[in-house]
Image (cartoon, rainbow, N blue to C red; front, side):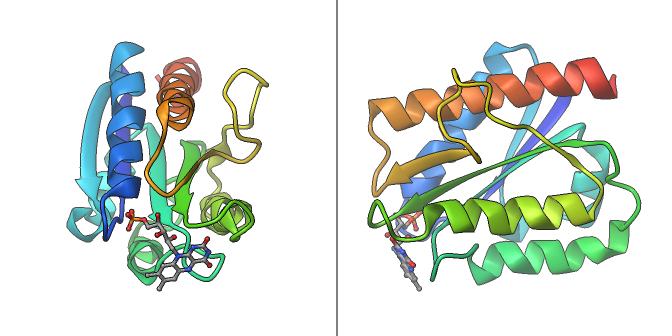
Length: 160
Ligand SMILES: Cc1cc2nc3c(=O)[nH]c(=O)nc-3n(C[C@H](O)[C@H](O)[C@H](O)COP(=O)(O)O)c2cc1C
């Protein structure tokens, strides 16, 4: 059974709702899922997961400082996250408010760790990960569930 870590930061609850949907999708796909706020994630939690999905609100078109801090702390496990499956999700206030650049900022850090980032096979929804504008609507939640399912499926295939 693939182990998936869904880690998120959320100040007003929007990204948290997305995180729950990602976790639900991964669970439905048969994965063993851990859902945590980034502040509670230890670098060893990253090491023990097969797939890592990280969510952040869009802050100035980038991941929040709290999410960046997790990546900074993850230097401790540099070289140990190679070949794990990675994916990202974000909530922004406006449709052109930098949500895709936020996803890319998360994915960029994952690539520096040598992780394998899950691309979008058309049916998932977002090119670079799942996006919601403000509080996630049904479509955004569906995209989040599909992202969780896809990461679980890839982690099972590649990492187990
Ligand atoms: C410090 C800060 C910076 C933000 N920067 C952006 C931004 O660049 N673009 C945008 O669309 N929304 C921006 N927002 C709005 C949040 O991304 C948005 O409200 C999001 O839904 C909050 O997610 P949360 O409920 O998980 O905290 C910003 C909010 C804060 C507090």
